[in-house]
Each structure stands twice: as C-alpha cells, then as structure tokens.
Length: 309
Image: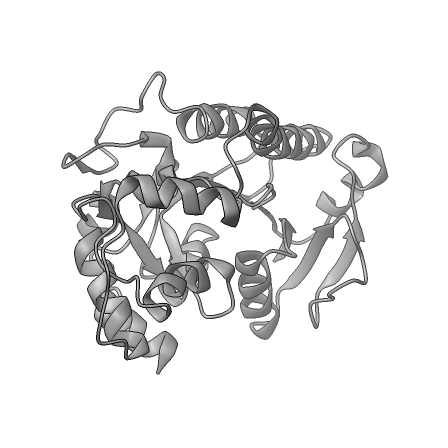
C-alpha cells in the first residue's frame, strides 16, 4: 500500500510512518520543510496546500492508496483570536487541499484516516462521552470551533472508506505533551489543579498506533466503521488522580495544589491555554469496546510505568 501522510513531521506522524515503513509499505511524507528531519525509509515530498497540482501526483499509484491527514498547528498556545484562527485554518485548508487532490483521481482513495480530537465535545463535566453522543452544534471556539469545520472539510473526500479518529491526549515520551504534564510534578506543584475534579482522557501512543493501523485496514482482527471513532483509553481519570500518578512517576513526595487563578497567571508565562487543564472530557470508545479491542495500556499507571520506566 502507498500511504500518504500529511503532518508527518509531527510526533504521531513520525511514529506512524516509522511503523508503516518497517512493515514494507511505501510511505510518502508530505512536509513543508523537506530534509529538515527526514523519516528513514519514507519518501519526502514538499507540499503547499495552496498549490495542489504541484504534489497531487503522490496519490496516483497502481497499488492501494491511503491518506492519513494529521496536518495542523500544535494546540499548545495562547487562545487569542489570531491563534485560534491559525489553529482552525491550518487544519481546514490542509484538509481541503487533500480532498481536492483526491478528486483528481479516476477512482476513490482506498483508505482515508482523518485526524480529529475529543476536544470537539468541549467541556463536558461528568457526562460520559462515546461515539453515540450527538455532536455539538457549537462550543468553545478553541475546541469545538476548530474541530467541527476540520471534520466537515474531510467529508467530501473521494475515498472508499473514511475513519475519523477523535483522539484524546496521546502519551509518548517523545512529545512535549508529556513533558508539560510532568513539569508541575517535578517542581513540587503536582497537587490537584483547580480542585482536581475535571476529567483527563488519554491514550498510550502504542495503542493509538494500533487503532490507526486498523483504520488503514492493516489489522485483520479489527475492522473500524466508516465513521468517527474515539481513540481514548477505557479508563480516564480525574485531574487529582492524574497529578498523584505523575508525582509517583517522578518520585516527588509533595504536591502543592494549584488554584485556578494561579494556573491562569502561570499560563501567560508558559504561553499556553489554561482551559487545557481547567476543562476535561470523560470519553471512551463504544466502537472499540464492541469490537473487543484489547488495550495494551488500559490504565494510566501502567502507561506511565512503560513510558517513564
């Protein structure tokens, strides 16, 4: 199979590309900066979403062709109008470009894996969210306001099978997200944040890779529907438990709590969005449960043990 990955220079793109290369697939990495951080065994192709004819040929092959769309600006930034617009446009414009490239083909792309996030649901309190939960019509601009148009942009893709992966926070030792989570614990501020009742949904990178590969049709034991699938561990935790496990992981015996006003002040210096810690979602996948998917790291404790050793 030829698998074309946009956003291949990101942590998930690099992990997926490396996995697919090891299995002998032809991986084409669409990147704005070819040569900067090459992926061994992958074919790098420079791309500009505004110039579809310059790279659309990568979707032409006598073999099966798949698209994995992971492109988008990292979400760890201040929630200014400018940043929110860039977060949305970087995803929507890239998706429109890939859809336009697929429409140039005489037959549909065999597989399309569309990245998304559980942030589409916004801040849901204690409500249990699965694929059966209706999609919101509106919500927080830096969450629902970005993800809704992102998913909508992919729905006209010329693809025989399209799976939208609504991914929770991916835990991977090679990503800034885990370092950001561990920082307060290492500094002794690993107590509950703003009371600690907000839910934290997550997934180990190894389990995300298995789900993504199944979406590409590469797992004969797991068939995913042509629909959104939540990629999240079956055991989300509240913030208080998250912080306790992080303290244990780094061997910090104390953990001062962080009031909301302190977090909001700190987020200015860290140039991040305080709602990333103040909001949460209690998400799990009914689709994966119905199909008997067995997570290798179903609990946060086992995931942190594996990642931090």
